Each structure stands twice: as structure tokens, then as C-alpha cells.
Image (tube, rainbow, N blue to C red; front, side):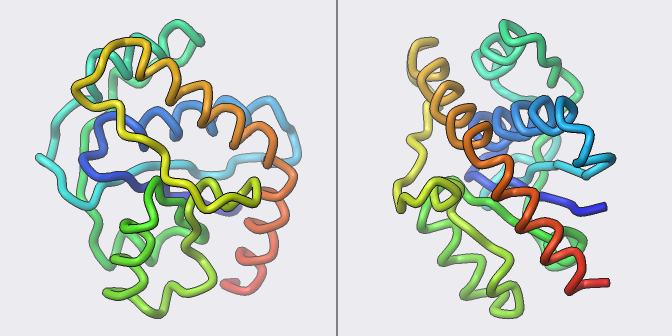
Length: 160
């Protein structure tokens, strides 16, 4: 079983959104079996729920993330995951600077589709901003599910 940690800043908008979306995509693909998908943030208020607009956008897609509580990144958490997908270049750079042993396991989420683009944080924006972020994340994650499988399989084998 491979595992994926998705990282943003506060762990209340983008990363829980991507977590819910990716879980849904993986559940629709039997080859993923029981892969683990979770999220965390680089600068969080521990225990804070996902934003109400994030929850609404996900609910409209049949995804319930009401159980989500923000948590911060730490070495033990990072070591428990095969792959780490970040929302911004700054997140990736900070993680690799502090934890160089993660090289080859940390990726900007847009790299999955050959881009080097940050995912804009909708925090504080209108509902339409959250919907735009959800659409962008869905497109990236759904388009790259084969690549995610290959990456998780390869890295999972290396870590076993």
C-alpha cells in the first residue's frame, strides 16, 4: 500500500480539498487498493476544521470532509508517507530544505501534469474561487492518476 500526503499552508482549504478529491479518484480505481491519502500544513492552527467553503465545494461533489482537522508538518509525519504533493513551490522548497532526505518523494502537485505552477489559495475568497481551485485540482489529479499509481508503486517498492 502506498501513501500520499498533500501539503498546503493552513491545511484548511487546498490540501483537504485535494485529499478528498484524490481519495474519491482512487476509490474509483480498484488497482489502488487501500492507498492512504492524508493532508497537513506548513503553518497551521492545530485542530481547525476545513473552511466552510471547502466543505461546501466538496459536499457538492459528494465528498464529506467534515471530520478533517488541520495538523502541522513534522519529520515523523513526513517519514510515514511515500509521496508528498505540495500546492506551492515554496512549500516544496521549504520541505526539501529542512528534510533533504525526502528528495525524490516531494513534488509540486502541478508537476503531475508537467507544469511548475502554484495552486492559488482561495482562502478568504468567494465561493467561486474555491470552486475554481476544486476544478483545477480535480483536473490535475484525475488526469494524472496513472502517473500517481506509477510513482507510488515505484517509491513504495523502494521503501519496502
